Length: 210
Length: 210
Image 1 (cartoon, rainbow over the protein chains, first blue to last red):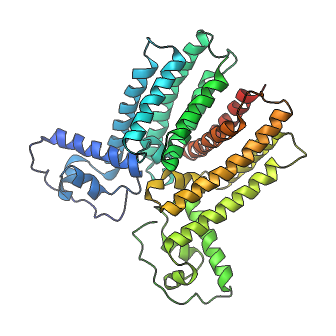
Image 2: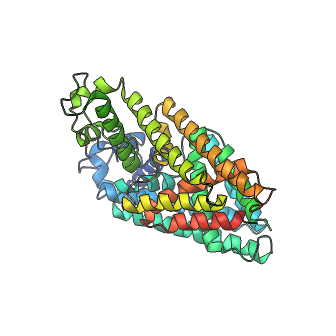
Image 3: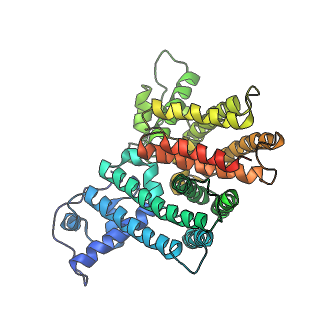
């Protein structure tokens, strides 16, 4: 994170109406917001603390280190995203490929809601992996592995329903999907519109359709 | 760029065996290296100057502003990459799809040579676009437009040779290619191996093959 900020000191927790676990959770949520918009290197710990009215001095009451904080933030986002994926990809009222479309539509709404300023926390951190602790790199790999597994299952269902060719390797295709997905989210931040995500999803579905 | 660094002051150019234009070019090359490894926000102007033994005081002798420097760096990389693309995609001794494979192999060599630390300067800056001047955002868009045009022509050639289906929109497919490409470069930095790029190229070629 931004080295420009004063290193937080060990101290007492903030006095507020929140209890300790609520404040810890609020800090993690604040971290998720900053990392999703600015990535790791440019997110200042001071801003993250200020956003939830926690004085600098009490950071280490909640987290043993900045690395421990980063781990908690990535874990929070990974958990949130996995739930979102399950919501769509396991929805048995829809055909498998429509579930992918619905997931993309959900993500598109999120991009537009934050005016194309917030992307994907995992994609942001992936891009600056050279600046991250090794623990974060391993966490990002684990997160992608979970997403890939979920997408593989959905594509295998489509294959069982004979919607996509049996010749396709669904594991490789799922890996391919997430690389293109991250690329399309980054491009949407650049163009400030949804065209890249639409192009990605449209072409992907066209290419895999039987 | 990293605000942690002292703002360079206007002053006299460095005394060295280089003339002014050589020093300016060396600074741009140094910028390309740092931006390709660390992106914009985490690249310190001090490091960039130090790398080519230029004293802090003379930065503004070469560039009117940090923004002007960024523009020169992006321009340099875009120019270098466009030449690399032409080298492969216009090579008439190879079939169109083989030209794409050769481009990917060339890029893979570069990734491995720098131990997966350097990615794509354009992809790095795209990811942190919220922190960049508007001039840089427009430059990144222009760069992608040039790459997309070059890839579109190559795919159209493949279409003319009946290697890929006539039903494919080569412009959309080229846009799709670059999104996946950037995603695969980022993923390779994360995994520290070439598997993501190989998966991306293999699946892409499999999906578009007739």
